[in-house]
Length: 600
Image (cartoon, rainbow, N blue to C red):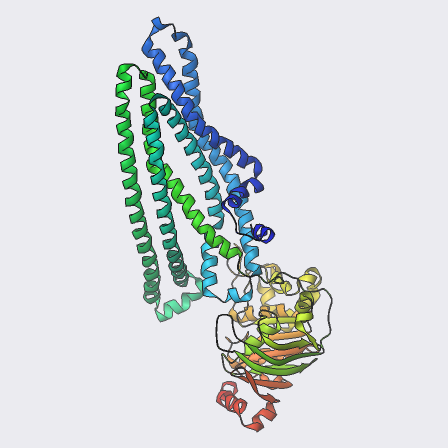
């Protein structure tokens, strides 16, 4: 699917969606398509057999036709048996198609999401689009395939019945054919209105689901009980949920009235047509067998026009509207380097430089960095401090290549970082962000993911880091040691404390061989004293590396060889802890205001 857009440089067409099951599971898809065609033909065959059977019975034994009645009766029974079994056969093949299509489509969606430019990750509109598409993508593809086949079956049935009617009363057949056109147009227009409403509904539903998770997730239990905010959050949930349901009900109500009004009119005309057949029957133009069988077929047609046709056209039109979202989703800008693995080669780091770097986030007007410049030397410890929103974390996002739309120069070892192969740049830097991940897999995997190139060769280093970070007691207490699943996703998973998760995430960063280690406030949830102790341990384990600490708390900055004070996107001070205190400017004021946090 994503490959289709990349290869053709165009939108995903309805035909491309329809082809996916044939590409992924060709044999079940072909069989299902053949069944759909045969299902459409067999209604015409049934009318012919029924007509012949009734005519033979009405003619009686003296007509000489009774010798064939058993053959037609057997054929009639076989047709009925097939109609009973065909749905079960179709459902059997649909199971295989659903599984294969879901696997393929979800893989394409996940791959797309993993390649997105970082700006889309931080954009609410993009995530609303992703939520709409990802939630229903595989179902839309399967439903589109089934509905196209179902619609084809219905059209074949209608054409067969119309041909039989046209041969007997040509004007009736022509009238029914013309009647179907405005009904289809009405359904298609209603489907477009439905999908527009679904966009608003999806946005509200996503928000309702978030507040629903707040009410049921384990992480929020303690605060929910202690602070008693259940009713407040529940009201937010119900507000979004009720708004979504009101919009859906209003849209569906309007659609139902329009569609069923059209169906009632169509059904009335079709019933009238049956009465028009009485005159040809009385004059002998048509036989009693044809009258009974065609009347039965027309009543069947009434049901299909009233429900099946409107359902198929509505579903197909709705999926066609959602295809616009699918195309928007797959055309979101990608970072071609997002999935590039770090180089296996260990690189030496001499220096990192920012020269007059100016940056603002996409879609905004305010500069976050305003001509920032600094230089970092190899094997030294640095700290960037400042108030929240001053631009500290943005520096790291640019250094790691999450954003590229800056002016100025960022250099590593005197070379513009844009000149480096991405694999080398990934191998130079290891970052632990404030919102570190808690992977609900084994403790061992949680750590070794930090150096995927040496996943199976880092056991010794992992155990050393576990000891240095004070997690040996935890490992010994876990039922399966380092092979214990963490969290509650797995049946045998074990919950651990927030502090233990933080230490695991730091080990994951440390096991990486990158020469530049960055901590972007990952200990912000710790108390200041625990944070200082943890940084002291970290400093001992990063000897020989260049380290950057991002923080708005200053207790740990005393370990840095040089401190950069960031304010309003600029470096306003730099120096050692002692030098900055002596300057008695912004850093000194910040430190004095926090000093009591670290007094024991």
